[in-house]
Length: 210
Ligand SMILES: C[S@@+](CC[C@H](N)C(=O)[O-])C[C@H]1O[C@@H](n2cnc3c(N)ncnc32)[C@H](O)[C@@H]1O
Image (cartoon, rainbow, N blue to C red; front, side, top):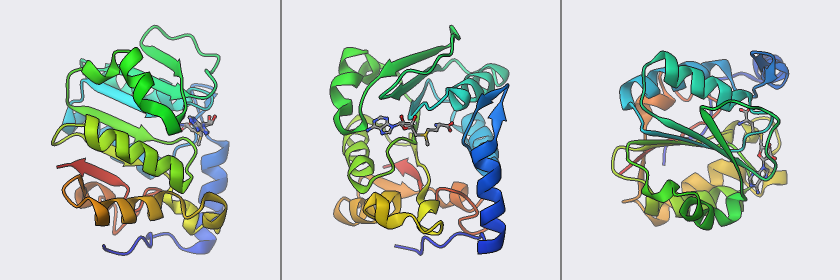
């Protein structure tokens, strides 16, 4: 497995992270790194997903952004966002669902998501714990089709000094999962390295289903 070290330096990362945490999209909090927004924009155009599935809605700003991007790119994609708590956003293009990353399979089945056409773009941006990330990888390794893309968000928390709080978080989950199941996902280096080696909040976190 290649290193998870990002292209960010510590002094730069501190200020960048403050901007990410304060960012809003159309007046709604949207906790996305701008580099990753640019990666999302290109991957959506290239992948042309029929399903955009977000785990971790927060205020709904990122779902709003994803719905606008899908609309502006003329994509025929359903946008679904799952969280423990449903945000106070009313947009007919977005389906917000209550669900827990630890038990996603019943949500996917009850909401009919499991049967939706591919390609899928899944962004896992919820609990960020090692166990939560691993639970998501287990479900999506079964449910995703070859070529689908999963963004395992926020492995940057290692470099923010928060890894211990998340039991190793996304990076540990990705490393262990791919080591144990090398036929499941490949690191999409074209996406991770679009702006330089792992110049992203999701180092080695853009995964292409094999
Ligand atoms: C980082 S925020 C999501 C940010 C959002 N995607 C954005 O870019 O603006 C994390 C979200 O995950 C949700 N969350 C935390 N634990 C969760 C779990 N076990 N299952 C589902 N969602 C969870 C929290 O309620 C919170 O809204």
